[in-house]
Every structure is written in C-alpha cells, then in structure tokens.
Image (tube, rainbow, N blue to C red; front, side, top):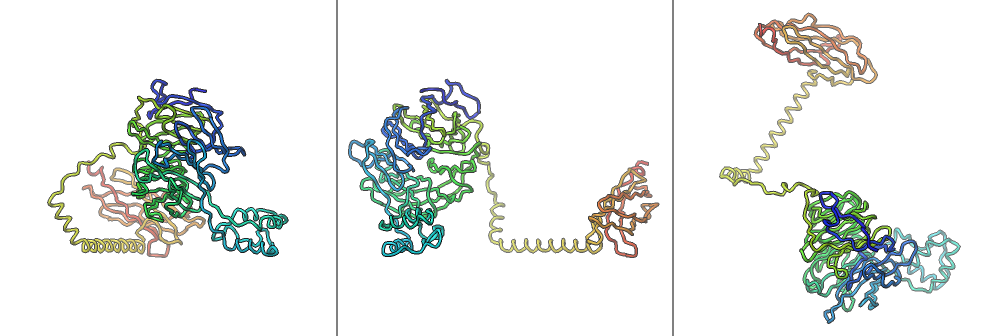
Length: 587
C-alpha cells in the first residue's frame, strides 16, 4: 500500500514539490498495527525486527518484516525493553545476531532462530522477609493483625520485596492464609528486569567488529556481557535507574558510557570505574539520548534539545515547537553525515546537525519510533511507526544534500566570528604586571574608598532626615508629600505647591507653608499662608506668585517649608530652583 504519506519541508518553511523533495514515499500503511518505540526497532539482514508492545491487553510479540509485509510473529513472555544487532564471533560467515531484552532476560537470535537465553542473576532477598516465610514453613502462620501482616513495609524496606510477598500484600485479609499455605514451600526469589540495552565494540572500532552487550537494570546497575560466553565482564553502579544508554570506544581499550537516569541526571562512566565520573544535571526528565561524534544530544520534557560534552559542559540549546516523543540517529555513510532525528507530538520529524535545522518531515500522525539504515536494496531508508499503529517507510534520494538553511535556530552566525583584537601594547603589559604585583593593595584601597563613600552617603541621608530637607515626610505621624512646579517666562512666575496627605484614613490639620528667599532678587506677595484640612489621598495645589527683581538674569533657590503650628522644626521642605527671567534679559 503505497501512498503519499507526508510532505517534506525545507528549512525555509515552504512546501516542496515531489521533484524537489529529499525523500521518496515508499510505503504508508495506517493499519499496520505496530506499536513500539525506537529502542525496540532494529534492522537485521535487510529485515526489520520489531519488539511490539501489544496494546489493548494483547500479548507482546516479536515481528519480522521484509519490505512492508510481516513475515513472522512470535509471542514474548514480557514487554520488550530494547533490541540490538551485534556480531558475536569472528568466524565466517560473519552473520549478525539479534539481542532482544524482555523482562529479566536477553533473548539472542541467530538467523532469526532462538540461539541463547541470558537471565540476570537473582538478587538476595530481604532478610526479614526470608525469616517470615521460614516461620510459615516451620509452624503456624504469624499473626495477621493488619492488612500488611508481619511483612516489612515495602516503602521503608532497605531491600525491595519479592514478587511473591508483593502479591501477598495486595490480597484481602480473608485470602492471606490460603495464599501462605499454597506458597510457603516455595523459595523466595527476587529478580530485577532490564530497562535499556546497547552494544559496545570489544577490541576493534571496525563496522563489522565483535560487540558486547551493555544492559541497564532496574536495580541501578550496568552490566557488560561477553559476546561469546555471555558472562558478566564488568558491573557498574548508578545512583538511579538507567533509561537511555550511549557508548563510545572499545571495551578492551578505552570507552565512555553515558546513562540517562530516572532522577533527571546523566552519568558518565569510563573504563575501570565502578561509579560515575561526571554528572550532568538536567532541568527536566530526559526523553532521548543520542551521541553525535563527541556531543551528547539530550531531549527533555521541556520541549528542547541540549548539546553537552562528555564532561558535562552545555554547548547549545534548541527549543522545539512541540513535545518530543522519540529520538534516533541519522547516519549517512556516503556523505559522512551524522544528525539527530526528533519525532514531535505535532506530527513533525525534525532533523538537526548540532543546533542547525536541516529538514522537516510532516506525517499524518505523531511518530513514536524512528529507525534509519540499510533496508532492502536501499542504503538510506527511514522507517517510522505512528501513535495509531501505522507504518511509514521513506527513502532518501541519492542526490539529496542536507544544507543548513537561513532559518537556523539559535544565535546568528556573526556571533561565532572571531573579533579582530588589537595587539597588546607595552603600556598594557606594564599595567598588567603592576596589577598583578600590587593587586592586594589596590583592592584594599578600593574597599576603603567604597566604605568612605557609603559612610558619607549615610551621613547625608541622616542629616536630610533630621533637618527635614526631604520633600517626603519621614515620620509616620505626619505622612506628607510636597511637589513644586514653576510656570512662566518672567519677570513674574507662578509657583504651585502640590501638598498631599499620604495616610490611609487620618486627615491632617493645622499646617503652615513658609517660603524663604533672597529679598534682593525676588518678591512674593504671599510668602506665608495656612494650609486647609488635608483629606487623605487628595492632591491640594497651593498657588503663589514670584516676581523677579534682578535685571541681570540671575536666579536663586526658594526654600519651601511645611510646618505645624507651634513648632519651629519643619515637617518637610523643598528647594525650588527658579529659572532665569527671560523677560528682563530681553529688555
């Protein structure tokens, strides 16, 4: 069923025609009934292997597709966690094997036939839990005084409980005794499960070299398996449960392992290290982890992509238009291109090289898994599954070239240009040496001057409060504010004093306004007057006229004081800078 499944957009945002599109629509089946994630997709011997989750209560299944058709299906005992292809041995013919992680086991297939089953080692049971089940074997059942019975609380237990005890705690009180009689003879087993899986080259970096399996488990551990004997070569501990893994290097030489965990951190481990060497703290939970050359690209639940070095230094951040559902690597060997593919909730698949947007693919439904590689006869095939169970297959044209467009997300290219910094002069070098030699003395002198400045400012502020030189009253008993406005060109000016009571409910009465001025320069017919009752919140304009007596254009300051009757100290004051009389100057 071939159809035009989606449209391809370039970075400028304009829709491309089929002739100018970078992708060929090979297949689209909205009813393929494939529900999986990117970690459960793998291409093996020109066939697509899918670990199907089996939605709607269906049993999980392992599906093998050849072209657009499902060739075989086989049931799985538990939900698949990851699928990977790897070479187990160097003997001819060099046929890659398939590893499928499901529950506590890794199922290895050779030529798509079951070959080996690796099970995680059992964990030691909880000591208190073991004692309680031993008591149930030897004699009567311990008293069940509460719903939890005698078992330790699973939230406060130092070691998690077994599945048998957890099922016991979920029963009603009337069903507990029968359950204990039925299962008390069984041995207590505590088994962890696999959460993520990837491959690591053993001793060579070649494309067809032997690889080891790297497993992440629910009990916060990383295991490296031998590809031939399937024994545990290395075991590493993490502070949290790993959900995404990325590795680089070879196990026998040197390797780096990055693990994104459920606590929102990414831990970097190196060879012969049992614990993380570096930690990258994210501001949100990770939804994907991809390594592009030496950069770790992380997708987060804040709808953004972040680039980090292996030492945890953030390089860049790109904001997405919608939530990120899945991520995977796009590697075009013929052109040496490595890019990140991100499937978004709005039906877009965006391709980035670092922070540069290369291509946008629009799909009819949100994409939940991505896989790129050689499929069939085509070297560059993009396989996508949608949220509704659809299957989309696209082929990259052999003439397609990804070019960074003008709508690049992030800072402009001019920001990365180097500045033409002038050469260091002799004066600059001498000054640098002087600052290096006398740095302590210069710092002390600066601190002394700074303390003196703060002291003088505090003294001036205190003097202003004590002498009421501020236009705003500093006392809570007389909450007043004064503002003066001068109007006119001269020689006669209009002086308007705006007086306001800033209290919330108490009016102010019995205030006087006095103007102090140089009588040789100015004349005020009304220099002293009473203030009416001031209602809270209202602005009262008090007007008077000022006549300039100087014919030389000299101006001075008029001090306006607000006093209370019977007190000599002013409540507040204002200094009015009078303008020069333009009328007298023109005459």
